[in-house]
Image 1 (cartoon, rainbow, N blue to C red):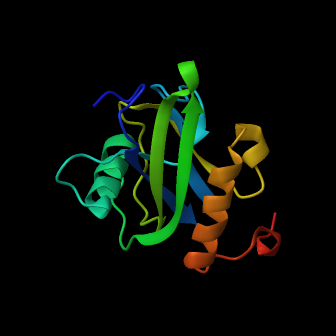
Image 2 (image 1 turned 120 degrees about the vertical axis):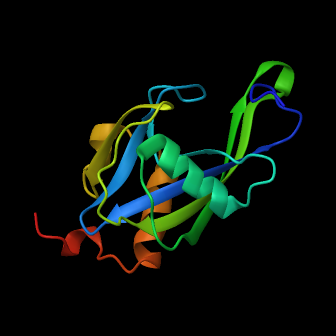
Length: 151
């Protein structure tokens, strides 16, 4: 199925990988949203569970392996297209995971990655839904609120 003007929504997977002071963000190398900063993730493949897709995407995009994955949120991404038909339509299942200490490396689907402090999202023009998911992930993993982290 084509990702552009699909016949039905595509299931996407995202992972908010957290350290106590930061979240891992990636810069998208392909459409949609090429060049935008987001959480690592991508499309679920046929025959994969959501968790398998999350782990595969983290390995492919960032070279990371994480421990437990915790459900964080569902985000719908619908980009308008021609004749009232959605150009892109993703239903993204987001997970939260604690960083395990490995060095992250940019894979083929992304152009760069960064550990971004919780107060620095404006510098990365991070979408409000990604910010919301990160907040949920912090609560889920019992990470301290931003105001409790020393500068």
